[in-house]
Image 1: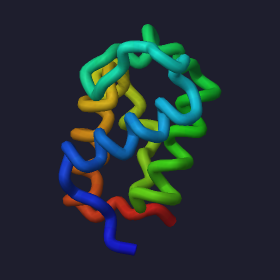
Image 2 (image 1 turned 90 degrees about the vertical axis):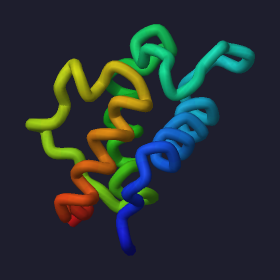
Image 3 (image 1 turned 120 degrees about the vertical axis):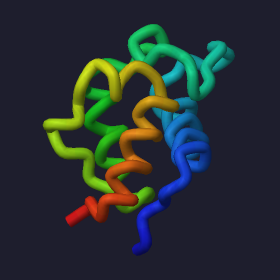
Image 4 (image 1 turned 60 degrees about the horizontal axis):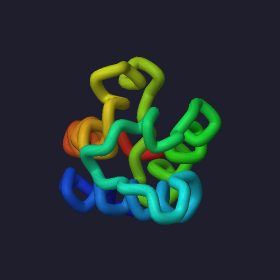
Length: 91
């Protein structure tokens, strides 16, 4: 699998996954919404990271799980795209 490298595409995939699995129906949520305000807790984050490995093809190392990278789906997508460009595929 070739990892996705476009942050906009990655953000759209992450948002769709979150809307389907975590975000309450009818909630105002997009790629710039705060993850914590969307109800994405540590358990949901683990599921989101597993989704990244399975569907996007990139493993996010613990060293990249920082407040800056976990602000929104857009910031997480930017991190994932950077990892993909730097050859950090899922193992």
